Amino acid sequence: MQNTLTLLLLLQLPFLNAQSSYHPMLVEGRSWDIFHLPPDGAICGFGSAGNYFLRGDSVLDGLTYKQVWYYPIRSNPPAPFCSGFYRDTTESYFFKLVREDTIARKVYHWTSDNNEGDEILYDFSLKAGDTLHYPFASYPILTVTDWVLTNGEHRKAFEISNWSQNYYVEGVGYLLGQFGQVFYPFEVWSVLTCMRDGEEQVYKDPFDNDPGCVLATSAAHTPEIFSFNISPNPFSNYLILKVPEGRLGVTFVLELYDLAGRVAFRRAIKPDSVVFSVDLPPLPQGIYGWAVNGVLQGKLARI
Picture (tube, rainbow, N blue to C red):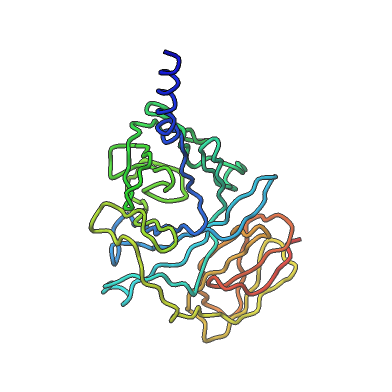
């Protein structure tokens, strides 16, 4: 009898290991295509899009985070024709910091909102009937089901609501807005249309009208660099910009990055005068890199 029980336990070990195995989400070489939908529709049907990927690490409060960056996804030809999409790999932008606890099966991000710091995004250890808790909201898990990826592998899918594929999936992330907390969509949301490991597609959004994986890339576009003066340096609560007259009325994006690579300030600016000032929010003292349209220009000191 004892030998029989031992044999049965040995036969069950592969099954138990498969049941208890965890598939990490933050894997080097993995990328996600995310399209953002505006509330009232838009040209091409999408407001903006990006190909998100991991690049480098940052250490905060003794915790190691992975840096999330993205390439813009553009239409070619541009709106209103929008006959195809491509990844513009000539530009890349920092998005946020994330980390994964593979033992606890949880993914976190670093946020400056309400001085929270480290905050949970997804909990892949939950069961149906459990609740995913955020500081200001809670979401019951309706079901935990099996999700089959395009490569045939199986993952756990955690259902938030029975509306429009509102799931987060183990090893993949949130299907209605990767790297963001789950929510109940009303008007504005995002769609994870594709996930790749390298160039192998392992997830595709099941809705046929979504773009799926954007496979084309383009290096034909060179980011336009605005040449202007910025002062004072060091600065406090404002910056003074001086632009050439030929740049008047031309919108650009000004960004400040801290030493951890986080975006401390971002604003789209359309200058109507050669010299103008930009008010800044309260920023900690330190060194900041400043960039225009995603191109790093130099360093500034905050006093």
